Image 1 (cartoon, rainbow, N blue to C red):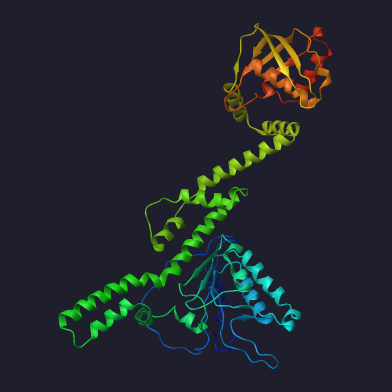
Image 2: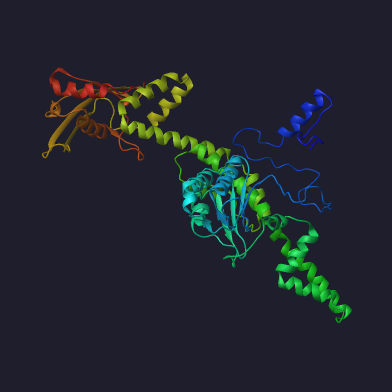
Length: 472
């Protein structure tokens, strides 16, 4: 902060000003939606530091979003406001803080609320409306949210509904102490947990009975030097054992940010995947190497390359969408296929033609007589009809077949286009051996030619099939 109390940076020239701006821009993601930059610097976040009390000691700030309740009562000019209770003004302030950090900042909430005020004046002041804004903010939150119910703290009534992790299960996690029920925890005490090494050791002594006993034994004058040395060694081992507990949320945040970024990429590849499916897919991509600490777990997803998986997901999604469209409107889908084929290069067309021909096997060579009986039972009619199909393969050229109908197809004129397709399916099964993965062969492989003896029914069938694309 500059001495005028307003400016954060000052520059003596335009070049120095641009340098300051670029330095500030390096702290934000490269593009919208990217993960937060984690840079290795010489001033490492976990280094040992010495602390000199600065000015404005009563103001504690940090970059990550934070919510903490106060147990102190408030005495405004008219009505007393109790601590640990959301009033219209405090609920609005909570919702505003959530929306201020909703895009790029993680959110940690030290939960110790009894609920909302239910007085008549508070109802007139829209306390429920302000509470619903908190739900709106948490349900749309884009970064990890940690909710921690402190020891001897409580979270009950409407506060439990507002902060329940089911509001946003992908981003929210709740933690609770085994003795969380009621009590007092000042906001400055919560901030003090992020403190220096000597304060951490003091907190260890206060919270861990084993550590306190070892520290007492290491300094007890009635103990022998050997006993004090053993207690000192055990005390150092206990410190090493407890240290990761006080760095848990940093590494947990790294893990959640890395996983959230990967899950968003998977969702972009296939938006129709459910949350459980995306999580299961990500778990299958992360190698199971028996890692148990968050420090190691954070490095694995940050270095994971899922580009091949995303390409396959996108291709599968597009194929599934095309199959759905083909089921809804087959003619439009076939017209679309024709346009796609027209836009292909000659090499791509040859590859496509070869693939289609390899998936088909003709029943017989040119000149072979084909005869078979089929029974068709349309859904719209109670009775079924038998069809005797008789045709002769005249010629085969480039995978295409020209047929001469030898017998009239009776009853065919009485069907509409969808029912006539059943007859076409029967003919395809007669003429070709279909691939195992496909029930019916694409009709684009067949050239139909009606003979004068076949009658109008054969012309109807030929007209039905002529609308399909012919691959040559």
